Length: 562
Image 1 (tube, one colour):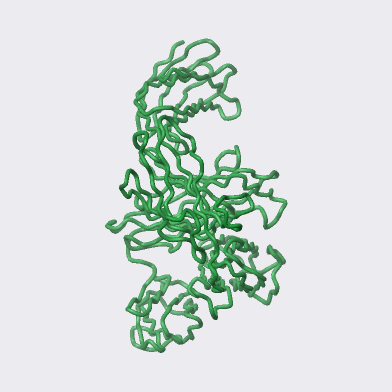
Image 2 (cartoon, helix red, strand yellow):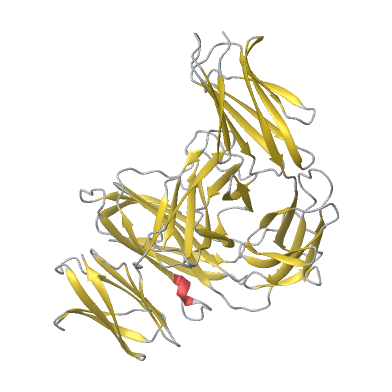
């Protein structure tokens, strides 16, 4: 019996449904301009049930067609087609049961083709301006300007490699002009600091890679720093990326102080140098810019933890004497207990309420929990419409990463591609995880109450996508109170505070007091290397004032204890 069909258009999806049938009740067809390839379309056809012989024939409107069987496992067929030229094509999808035509749908598909330009940066160890496999990609971000036909169109901050979509008529010249090299490195090639590529006719899957060649500066400076991502539940896991932004090897010590609500039980990679109570240290013999060190720590609850409880950790990398930028040597974390633990997640700093234009730092963490090596991994990170994609800056990654910004269905998507990552399986504890860290700005002019929610999909080889949790920020009264003048910046957070109040400053302050609204001092503390953490859990709810004192005089800021 022939089915009736109705066609609905919503966003970038084109869906049709068919009426009841003895063997299946309905099917949906999703159409998506493929965000990975300009001018390409992916169709996913899903039925509510399965009968042997179900198939879908796709006629793409450019003389090409194919037929895909509906699989028994997922009740799904998927078609992929890449067009060679821009234009509007009439696409027809036909549903068959064996050789019997069941129904069809057609519509117009606007297609825009492009070229992809691959721009990389590497450490030119032998100074020959030719990339060899033994020469590592840049781990510190560089910045370049992108010109199309002589007109600046983008500014890109990237590490290792950036994949840029080039649009325009054949012959359109794109220029990629280096604005700033990676920290601690000098440009060696090209001499003018500009790479060129040209749009070719038709679909071009990838032009030859163009590379900026760098070499380490002759300085003996060092800049140690940390990136940390953590997940708190009944158990706690932290991933620590310790790095040196310069090429001169520098011995370093990483110290983690964790919440007494947890206990350490011989579970860290690499093995710590020492463990004393809630303090763990690692001695790292020679950190350089091309070889960061990655640490994984597992903790287990020492008391009964409930969802919504908070735990406090601090991370420090030393020495600080002689460090070019000691501000990135210390991280203060307050984590909220979640009821479950998923090693594939996304986190954001700062959390909670923010002001328009705030720079947000996202970490996407992934872990191979399977029983085989993950040979290729990529992440599709769908950005909130309230973020500015042009402000993207890739800060670090655990492996060589190719980054591209895509647009599909009106959404901006960042693709982080880790080809040939060969991530070990879950039997290799401490060696089966990775991450990517980037910053991006909230748009200016957002109204109070506007939400910035983000999530990402992680693809391990050909396995189904693994979705992360969703991070949420809201435009409103910030949870970070900031004092700024011509010589220093001080941050008090979170605000309101529940148990731990953190103070971070680059001013010359040595102590702080907390006073109630009557002016009575209720807590005094010292400030060590610009940082202090104060336990305010015993204070009654209400309004309090933090007063900082030292070489920069006295400064006061209000916070709320809840």
